[in-house]
Image (cartoon, rainbow, N blue to C red; front, side):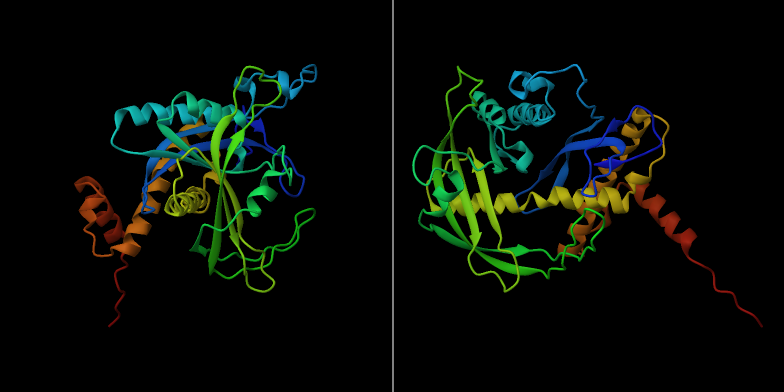
Length: 326
């Protein structure tokens, strides 16, 4: 979410944790990550100006076409990944999404052309026909199939502000997770009478012995990836942990590139400026990660000759000449 006040043609953003509303653009992007965690680039980004429904629009959510819903952007981005997959048939593409992507239409879209798999954090604890009648409770009762260790990043403390709850500081740690798996049939919503259920896999990851006073890590993941062994479950979990790379990239955009401070007069100019900064933030993130892993890497790998000359000239300009008195 971008909080930008001066441009025209902005949309009304969702109220934040304090209940305040503001004008701005919602950024929805697809960010490519290699299995080793290195960012490969920006596949697609949309700066969307959200607008509330018209007062005379009395349609129920079930009567609104998916193309008119804000969640349709997830389907648009998935279709772009399908087009990309056709150009690189030797590469497996996996669309890793957060909980907002947990809706039937996206899974239905994937089965039409299954060349790109889905791996999504589950949001809805769906009803099932057998005891314990809830999906999350059902998978908790299955046997543990594997255990893995993952890094839990540190969290800074946040004071209480108005309606925003305080958040205690949390040191980084290694969490030992127990993994479970369950094959399920995802039923179509009642307003889709002609849709068959979608066959997907549910993965449960739970930290059984968290440190005292610390909330346990617990994830429910929905995926179309075929799971035949514990190794497949572990692989899906490792891939999901890479989703936080896009959050790191967003932090570079906001804290490094300062896109919240852009002051263009129109939303269109703002989109252009953000588009440039998207690439800059990716380059900064890539250089940072490569610098940590391979500090001896030659600069020519990441910069052209013109860019290197420009940087050398800038660095030389910044060097201060010592002032000597006699």
